[in-house]
Image (cartoon, rainbow, N blue to C red; front, side, top):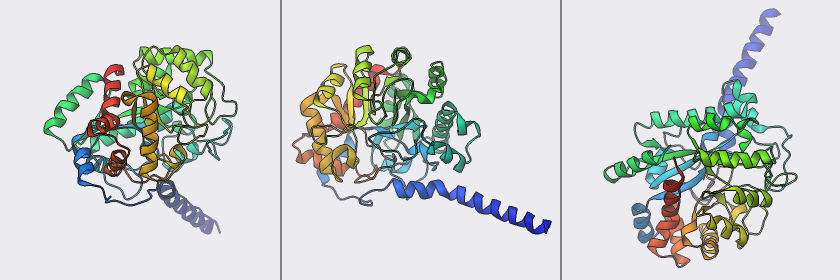
Length: 387
């Protein structure tokens, strides 16, 4: 009898291990989908333009899922080979540390069960990540570092203006390389201690959003329960981030939190991924007044690619949102922030930029204007703010 029980325990353990090994990939394949599979049809004009512009995407959650991003994958929307094929010069890899169960764009409780803990367990992440959000962020940052190592020089980590300039010079003679930098979605990743700004800076983080999908001790979220403004601790966080030359990202901020950040900030701020109320009126998106306020700091607004952000499933809907943002905020203050691999369905993966360029051309943008939107504006911001 004891022998049977032992064999049952061993068999159950094997089944559990196999399930945990494959579960994150199965979840990702169900959540990070594209409307159409590559290769994508686009005009030769758009293809040529996408090849010669320096393209920057300000937001992708690809580190969340545990895939080896140094190799091409049939799942998800971003990996290094596809970034190179799509001529993505620089990708912001944003770290998502907590996911309240039942996540939605309207109202989430910070006390809800954290699906992120379950994901860490399923990925066999170190036990410290099961309870500490700071350790979870460090684990993701180390995953990025390993991706850089495994890419054999194809992926470059950007932590400073010097890194950026050296990479840009190298890319002139080596066009088949790409780069990334790290961001954080929600300052709850600090585990309540502002000293952890230094910890995450040392791990490579160069952009941080005060909030994500729920209110925290820093401020209110656009999808939180109360949607309040910055706390005093939140004001101190903004000051610390600026001193450390970490970009302040107000994506997911409540209206009051965004207003409070802009009142404290002395440097340009970024909205890494959003839509605009002018084409898609919901509490996730920016009003015209907010667009102008972000632009007034010298900052940029990254337009996202998913349907809740742009009220439509296609490139034309993204281009329409970009047109509105440019008309309101000005050409120098609009960028791309896909939200690839952020549990969203998008019209294309990261190789599909020419499809968006065609849609922007149909909106009446010229080649030089598209070059600014696709990367020039974000590059100017990074040169100004990075340490």
